[in-house]
Image (cartoon, rainbow, N blue to C red; front, top):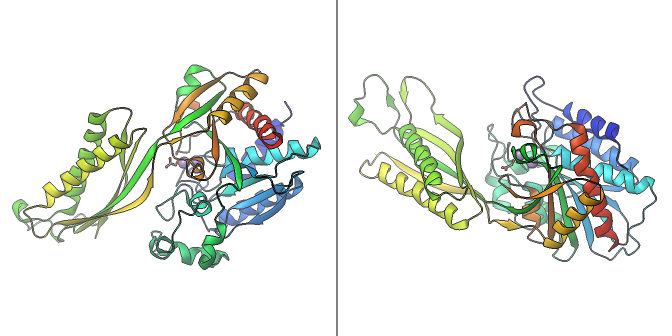
Length: 412
Ligand code: GLV
Ligand code: MN
Ligand code: MN
């Protein structure tokens, strides 16, 4: 192997140290001190690999290796380095480190590609701070809007725009991050699988053919706060009860439509939030995913039908929906998939074609370029939790596959 296991281990461990919740998994939210320190580490590593490094208008770090034809479209490779709350060390960083290690290998082997290569590290992919996610890639593809920067807030009420400003970025310039169609030849992302398929099959790498579509809807149910001891059960406007029954309806609808469709309520806030007050307001999120757009729409229709049913006939109950994230199912580029499979084979690694149930920056980048997405095994299929783990040698298999493929794409 041309990549070095010790460097991969050192990168994972170094990034894992920039963590707001040591001992309780990794928490690295966007535009925080942990973000700043991780960005500094990534920038230094990119510079040492001979890359020209800049940060785009929304905070994505871009390290560029020039090609012999500087006007040729760019081959881009990377992932994100923000995390969920109390997550693991691999979701995102594995792909960022893939870029770092590929850059080092090309640099030390004196490879001068025809196409420029940009190694990137994005932020707020998880949406763990402001609720929307895929932020760096949406900015790059022109999907980010002024409205979002001004109105999406973290739990302290700080808008994305305010957080950017405090971090030293000017939110007014967000559109400068946009890259034009044709400017990027390919986007290649490595990610941990976050599920059990590769571990069970024993294959070294997964080559994603389809990424599911996602709808993430914020639901605000307004009821009426009343005394929990004195208000008879038939005189309440309990916002939590509406939310709970809607969550069950979403779950049942996902099971009913099938085709691997999933629906999750993973975030819910009860206000005012006291054991002795009937809930007056609840804000919760329904995350719906499927490879079939029709199935996503069917679950969303079941959710709204349930909300209508539960709020009808009680003047004190109402609800509002806000779409936070909306993506269609996306296909990876067949040529890139074939190249990834050939690279794996050349390295003596087994691969299998897969579906991704998780969202990734690559699926957004598919708006403007041909994408490839590579998975490596996750121990026990666990992810978005402190136990998330991939053995370093298994990660190295994926990195080596990407390294080989990026070189081929940049030289063809
Ligand atoms: C990110 O991990 C997502 O799939 O939402
Ligand atoms: Mn994630
Ligand atoms: Mn991720």
